[in-house]
Length: 481
Image (cartoon, rainbow, N blue to C red; front, side, top):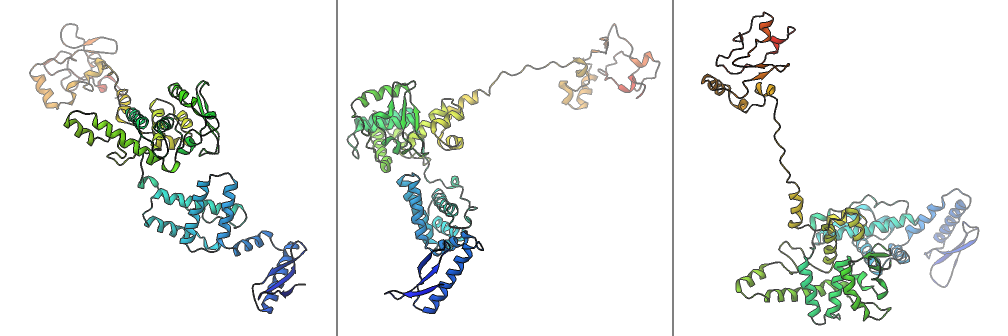
């Protein structure tokens, strides 16, 4: 039997028999005794229905989760993301996206996070000037949160599942470009000769650029490398990155070129074992490379002796951070450079995808591979082939005027040629037995003469009367026609 009682505080508490058969104590959050008693009786009836199988146990859990604030669910979601082994940056970014949408939609309970509320919040973010790619990232985070709520049994269904993102290609704010081999050479040279920048020496910066362009590793992956990550004596030499630092959360083993391995040997020999090789600022790697690009471009311009050439170099996008099309060359552009070189080498799509460590070849070819005009020239030259020789048509077909050069001319012009007594090249014909029909000696009568039939029109004999070559008439040859 349910009962209510009061502690030192103002609220009444209820005691009732729960679904598991044990007595439970619960605050009624009211100062009125009658209201508290009704709540206690209701809770006891609900527990009895659950205990005796008259109510789905999940319905009770759904009501309990609905009564909780959204912030508590978001905190549990954050704990789950960390337990799965996601990076701290990914966890913070995902949770920040969810909190931003929840705050803009003024949602307090789970039922307030409706598709319409999320759609309006994303639209407001878009109107604030954010790129479509950012809006898609925020929407993915919220949909991940909604999917977890359903999988964890906190909601009956995922109402945000059908929400679709934007076409980010129509609003790309940051388009990267690949660097040419000459740009890479001058960039590494400027870094080696340059001063200390953001705590990194010139030699370390140059080696970071070479590794990024030779492996396709991201800044976070390069920052995790130790001397034990390299196996330069393998065939081919490889560099390994632990799953904790890769984007796809897998141990990666990347092959490298022998030339790069030889450059790494003396550099690694001076490094202590067990310590990270590069003090690379992951969030500021673009600023680091931008300083070396400016230095390399300034030295490249000063190399000129004439004023005219110097002016031309100043107009050139060579070693410039942003080219004339607005494409930038930041640290992640070195990964674009690596993928572009792999594709330009003639590697298959599957090989390029594996070396780029992408989940789909569309991302490898469509986003990271850059093609230059000189790369397209061999494909265009392959289209040039030997012209097939002209096939000589049988004389019998030429006689009909089908493939004759004069067939396209008006009939009046051909008639004038025949009246002037010109002899056409196809004036000699052969019948099915190889016999010649034409002018001069050896002329044989046409089939209608052999059958004593009256010819039509001027077809009285095989002798030429200056009217050109006659065309064979099937009505004369075949009695059926």
